[in-house]
Length: 247
Picture 1 (cartoon, helix red, strand yellow):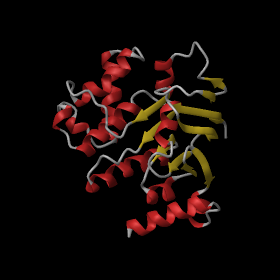
Picture 2: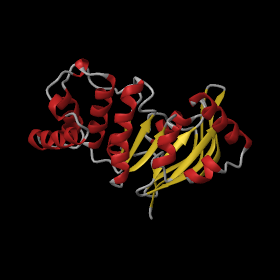
Picture 3: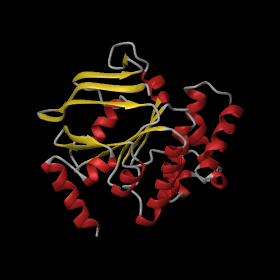
């Protein structure tokens, strides 16, 4: 399998706080990488660096062997290849569902209105939101908004899709539906990097699991390796705490 993304010696600080410390990892085509760890361990910052929402202070992020941190990279174009689904949906409140899914296609990809609408309707149907195409985004529940946000990201035909805790802002009964959509995308071979607290999802869907702790990758491995035979004391402590609170 070809490496789509390779990260070498990545550093990021906010003021005196070093949030990412010498991060190294790679993502192969078709992999689902889940990133787990306590709040504040650097997981979301890592995703935001890959999507260039944050600029790292050092290191390399290679997308198909091109360093996206070098001058001259087209950030908007990069984000069409490496899309992102946010915890807080980030829909345009003044646009309906269909318009939310069309605007990026027309502005960034220069698709015609008809082409953008066809693509939008295709993905809205895929995530179970076709019947809400003309609904205002303010009328939707959290789970519905997140389905639309996923459809919107897919409309840009990304090669990699980043998910930043996509279920953490949802009511518990909404979570399963979003995870089902993500499982379906994973089964179809979409390359995904998912920051999540949903351990059952990570265990079931991941190709590899990365455990982050205090800005470093403390451990990584297959779900079986990481969940059943963790090597590091911090990983064991984290998983034990998770299991004891989720019973």
